[in-house]
Length: 120
Image 1 (cartoon, rainbow, N blue to C red):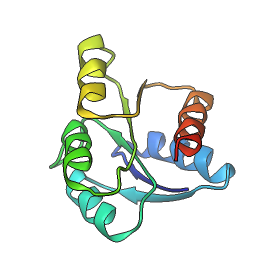
Image 2: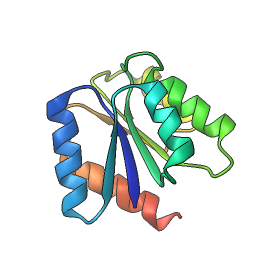
Image 3: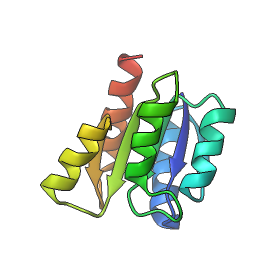
């Protein structure tokens, strides 16, 4: 799959990128939510993985945007340091496919990505 990762923490970004490219996925990076929105329209993205706390357009705003504005439903996985049940619930209500809390086990990320692939 072609996966867009919107993450501003370099170490987390590298972990995600390494985990997914090892499994054969193409990974693209967005530095902020605005760039992610442009790439979602231009690049034929199959999956978006985003942090909540991003510059400009926040991760939950991206989830809302994807589910309201893009014809092809692009699944979104949220990864965040925020470990509050109400934040997780809000992300899911906005249309997120899944939610992982940092630090996360790369195997958990792969399971979510495989679940996205199985539902396409």
